[in-house]
Image (tube, rainbow, N blue to C red; front, side):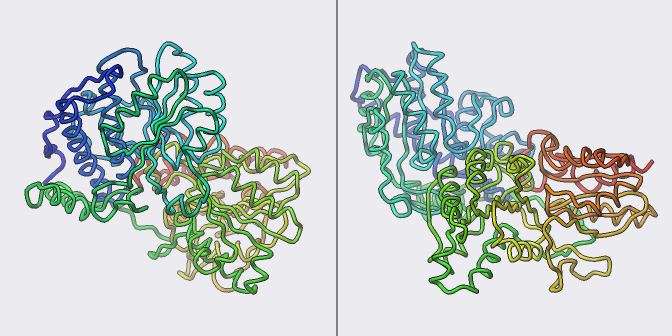
Length: 637
C-alpha cells in the first residue's frame, strides 16, 4: 500500500465533543463514558501514527503522548466550555509532539491521513513542535523543560485567564523550572501544571538514579498547591483538576501512572520513552481487539529512506563516534587501578548515557560513574568541581544543542581552572529528526574566554581519530570539548585506499592535517563534513581541478604553518555543519586577513531551519558533496 492513497484506518469522527465545567467536580455517567471512549480512540491513534516513525527508521516518542491523553481530553473539554482559559496545550516535553499533531488533526488543520507521515522529511511533522511550520501547532516547545518560564509570561499577559502546562517528572528536573516555580508563587500566577509522573526517562527510572527526588514535594516546597492522583482514574483526575483550577494561584496535579499503561512490551519501561516498534504496535492492536493484522498494511509498507549516494574517499563501514567516545575513555581508564580511577576521575551522566557513549563507561568502570538526572547545568558544574583539584578530572556529556544551556557554567569552570573533559554528541544537523531545536550548531559558544585564556574544541572525523584524540587529551589540564554527531561516519581513506588515521597516527592538538595538497585552492573541513568534503575534492581532482583538503580537528586554534600555506593559494572554502553565523567559517576569514592573506574565500554551514527526517537534513542545508563541488567551481573561476 502506498501512503499517498492510504486512508487513516481509525474512524476519528467517532470522537465525541465534550464540555466540562469545573463547578461540577463529579463526572456524570455520560461524561465519563465519553471521556473513556475518546481517551482510548486517541491513544490508539497515537500508537498507530507514531509507529510509522519506527517503520521509516526516524524513531519518535510514543509513551509520553500516550500517557497524557486523559489530561488532554479534560483540557479540551474545558476549552470547549469557556473562554476563561488560554486554549493552548502548552507542553514542556517537546518529545510528546504527537499530542500537538493529534490535536491539529482534530481541529481540522491537517487531514488525519497526514499523521501517517510522522517525522518524515519535509512532512512538516518533525520530532518537536515548531510554531509556524506545522498547521495548527500553537507554540514551539524548544528543549526539554524550557516552557514553564515562558508560560509564566503568558500568564502575566493574561491575568484574567488560567494557563495550563503539561509537564513530566523528567522535564521538571531542569533547573529553570525551579526559577519558574518561585516566580509563579511570588506573583500568584494562575498557572496550572499537569505532571505525568511515570518514573521513566531515557536512561531509566528517576526513583533509582535520582534518589530523594519527589516532584510533588518539590513543587509544594516552592509554594504551589499540589494534588496527587491516579492518572488512569478519570474521576480522580477530574476531581483533582477541578481542585487546582478553583485554587487562586499556581497549582499542580501529579498524575501517577506507569509509562504507556497497557501497551505490551513498553509499559513501565524506558523503551516507552522512545517510539513503539512496529511489532509492538501490531501486538497492541491485537490486544485491543482490532481485526487481525490491523495497521499492518500501512506500517509494513513504510521503508526507511536511504540516501542514494556512493561516497568515494571513505569506507563503506560506519562507526558511531558518540559511542566510541566512551570506548576510548575506557581505554584510558583500563590503565588505572579501580582505586586510582575512582580517586582521579568522575564521569557524570545527564540521563543520556546510552546516547552519548557513557553507558559503556558505566558498565566497565562503575567506580567512576555517577548517574544523574536531566540537570545539565548542575551536572556540568559537579564535573568541574571534581576537577577543581589539579590532579582530578571531571567528565561530562550531553547533546550539543544543550551546550547553549551551560555557557555560564563553562565560564565559572574556566575562572576556577577546572579540569573538565566535555563530550557533546549530536553535533551539527545530520540525522536530527528532532529538528531545529535539537541542532547542535553553536559549539563555538564554548570558546567564550578572553584572549589570555585557552579552551580546546576538538571534532574528530572518524572513530579512529576519536580514539586518538581522547587518548591524547584526556589528562590535559583545563576545559576540553569533544564533539561527535548523532549519525555514524565512515573511516577516512587515503587515495591509495588505506585508512588515514591508522595505527601510526598520533593526534597533535592545534595541528591542522593536510589530507591532500592542491594548487587550485583548499577546502577546510572537520568532523562529519570531512568525508563529504573529501568526496567532493576527489571528484574535482578527477576532473582536473587540483583542489586540496585540510582537516581541522582543533576548531578554535590557528595552525600558523597551515593557514599561511593555504592562504597563499587561489581560494579557501570552509565546509562545516555548524551554524554558518557562529561556526569556523565566520572566523576563518578574519584569521586570513589578520595575516594579510587574501585568497578568494567562502564558507558553508547550516543556515536554515530543518526539514525533519534523517539523512535529508544535510542536502536540505546545501551541504551535500554536489553542493560543495558547485561552490568549489565558483571559487576557482
